[in-house]
Each structure stands twice: as structure tokens, then as C-alpha cells.
Length: 150
Image (tube, rainbow, N blue to C red; front, side, top):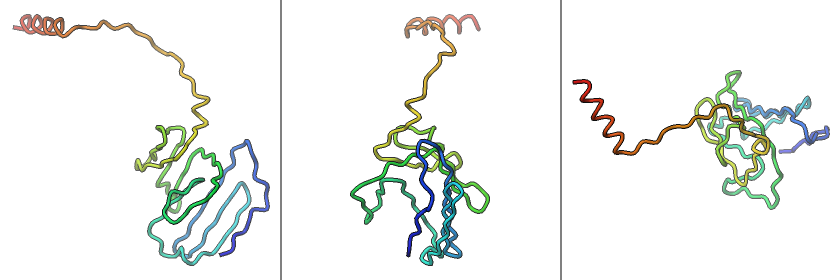
């Protein structure tokens, strides 16, 4: 299989739309980066039933790299035809795991650094003092309440 590099400079410090289309019936792979499209025929893809994806570091057995490029992702969407079947919104992560919005399938990271966490701030919208009851005062309240109902 021959890889065709993009003839377009990769832009930095800006979000760029990218998509990967896998046609398992015909064995075709289409990569769209910004407005540049590359199509590759890959016969081994035909009839594939299960796929796994890795961005940056690849944890799969038999695949290793000495150097791993940093990857910034915002959202990951998987569609079957026109129907979206998975959607991971990275802003809704919990430590190194993010669950997809449709079927709650996990996507996990290793050595993640969530850029969004540097920009999140909390704004107080409500404050309230509450009285803390001891177990004895709760029992007394319940007993008094029960006696008043009789």
C-alpha cells in the first residue's frame, strides 16, 4: 500500500475539520483534511467487522512507535452512512476517559493533557447555609412528628 502525503501545509493553532471514511464493502479509505481529499483502495479492508482506532500513542499489541506525536482532538464522531452512531465530546471527559453521547462507549487516553481544563472556571451561582442535625435531634424530631400525627 502506498501512502499519499497531503500537499497542503498543516495549520497550527487553529481547529481544522478532518474526516476518515472507511468503505468496508468496496475496500476504500477516504481522508478529508480541510478541503483536501485523498482516496486509497485497500482490499484488506473488505468485509471487516471490527475496527479499533488510535490517535497519537497506539496501545495495540504488535504496534509500537519510538516517538509519539502530540494530537489535539475536540470531538470524535462515527457515522454509519448518514446516521451518527458514536459521538465523543472531549470537553466532557473524566480524567483519562470520555464516554460517547449515544451508547456510552468509553474512549480512553494515556498521558492526556486536557487543554480545556486550563480554561474552565467556576462561577458561584448559589450559596446557602444549612443546619446540621445530630442523630439525636433527628430522632427527637421524628418521634415528635409521629406523635403529632396520631
